[in-house]
Length: 327
Image 1: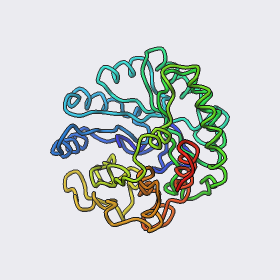
Image 2 (image 1 turned 180 degrees about the horizontal axis):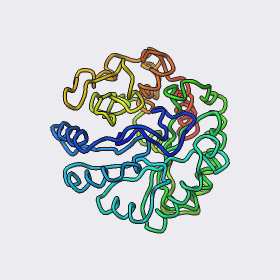
Image 3 (image 1 turned 45 degrees about the vertical axis):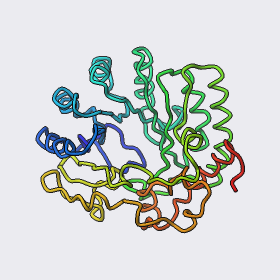
C-alpha cells in the first residue's frame, strides 16, 4: 500500500482512505521487497493504496530498481493516469487494474468521478493496453451490472471484470451497503445474457472472472480461496505494518509485525486448514467457490467458521445458470 491517501472518498472504502495521510518511503518499500525476495518463484507485487498514483515517484523508483526481479500490478481509480505514466507502466510490464462500479450515474453515487475512470479507459484503448476492471458489488450497483457489461463493450481495453462483493470493513462497516440475496440471484441471468450479446459482437471477448472460475474449476476439488488463505500473502501498510490481507490492514486481530520484524505465523492466520462451515464441506461445488473469501467471512460473521452467504448465492446461481442444477 504505497499510500493511504486518496483523491476519492468511496462510500465503502476498506482502508477508509481520504485526502490526507501517509506515503510509503523507499526504505520501507525496499525492506518489504527484500523480505518478499526470499519467497520461491517470482513474486507478484501489487501496488495499491489509497490511490497509488498519488505516490508515483515511489512507483517509478521501485519499477526501475526491482522490475526484473518481481512481477508488478497496479490497482488505480484512473483519475491521475496520463499517457506518460501509462507508457512507463507498460514499458515495465505492470498489469493494470481499474476500479469502476457501474455506468456513470451509478459509479458517481458509490465512488465519484466517473469521467476520470472513463478517460483512463479511453487512454488504455488508444494505447492498446489490457485492463482488468474491479467492481465492488453493493446494494446500489448490483442491478446495474448488465448495463456495465454493455458499457464495457465499447472499450476493448477491458478484458476481465472482477465482481468483488462488498466486505463489512472500513467505511462499509458503518453502513448497510451489502446487496440482498434476491438482487444477486436476479442479476446473474441478465448479466450472462448481456455478456453473451456483447461477445457475439466483439473481439477480444469480454470475460467476467467469476464466470471463468465457474467454468474452469473442478467443482469437487477443494483448494484454498486465495494466496492469503494459503498463508502466502503479505500486505504492507505505508508505515511498514504487515497483515495477511489488504482488507484486514489495520486490524489488530490480524497484525503480523512489521517489515523489520515480521510475524510469519500471523501472516498465515487466514489459512483455511482450520476448516469451513460443515455446510460448505458438503457442498457439491466447493471446488468452485472454495468456501468464499476468508476476510469477507470474518467481516460479516466475526468468524471464518460460517459461510459468506452472499458469495454463496452468487456462486450457486452462476453454477446453476452455466452448468446446470446442482446435485
